[in-house]
Image (tube, one colour):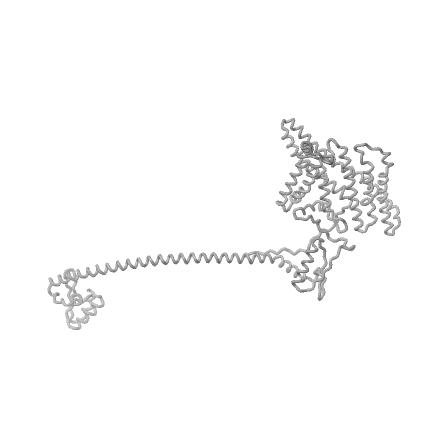
Length: 552
């Protein structure tokens, strides 16, 4: 109102008056047409309602206060009714809108959850496909690694000027060694490469010639990876050369045979056989791999000789008692082996024969190695027929001395003694024959001195080796003695089972180690010393360096 008054005061002849009628302010403007036009415009600017718009045709009530008040009340009542109607409609409409909004929100949430679930499922499928594709790709890479390594190595080797390949402009030449048992595999691989590349590949296979003096030699193959560690028996003594017999199989048989003679027991042999079969797959490296593998032939040999001795966990003659109880008669005398405690002389005669046979067999192998080397005179000496004839003559001369005694004059007069002399003469003549074969004549005192040395070595070494084998009988007696000790200990502590268990523990530990060491000593010195030199070169196959791939 103040602002309107301010503007109207600037208009000449215009007057204004404010009347308060029943709580309603009426603002009346007096003047001419100019004042009316200004008032209408000011009312429009400040949003003041024209009285004619409010009262309609009842503008005449303005002068009558009572009528004006009544009319205003009617208008207020009508206004309240309209407001109530509008408010009700707006609340209902708002309620409907809110319900629609809530319904839309629920529908939107459901659709969002469905879309989310579908997206997550699809995402998991994509992740699975991605992992599967990555796994396939990495597997393909793993399968290709050996070929990649091979091609990389070959290309790098070919790029060198000093590559170990004889190359021409149109051909390259390769030469090498391979074990005979792998020859079919090598030929098959060459044929496969020939078929894939379409290039001509020519190859020749030859046995070792006289010029292959330092050819590498492979390990003796034992038929399976489980038994392959048995090669350790030969490797510890040396590596066989291409000019000598590979003793891989022979060494295992001789070692196990000697061990069984000393440690013959069915029950204890079963223990070591079970330990070997159970523990061997668990060890792929280290000394336990070799030890558990050796348990297998040692256990088998102990079982076989335990049957021959008739011994089960130090219980003697259990099988014999069972056969008598079952009224079973065998067509041969059982036990087959002489009892070490009660038939000691017979056992020592038998062991003496075993020693002679082993030494003679070793001498024959020595002669065969000399023949492979082309050293024909060497077949006659102390590592050949000379030693073999000497030990066989010695055994035949005194074969029964542990049971019947020894008559020196009778020994000298018998023909086996002459066999001993023939062996020593051959050992003496070896260096002289060697000198004659090479065009040096008799060789003078040097050859004669070497001959005397060979004769003395044959006499002393052969005699010492023969009696060294008697240690087998000694340890067989010790094994049987543990049986008697277990029985005596059981009576002393009034518990026979505890006594025999204690003795079995001693046998499975201390005696097992002692018998193993003695068998190894007889194998390396007495037997293999007659023929094995062990100066060979190990065969190492052509390999490619490993390729390390990092997965990102």
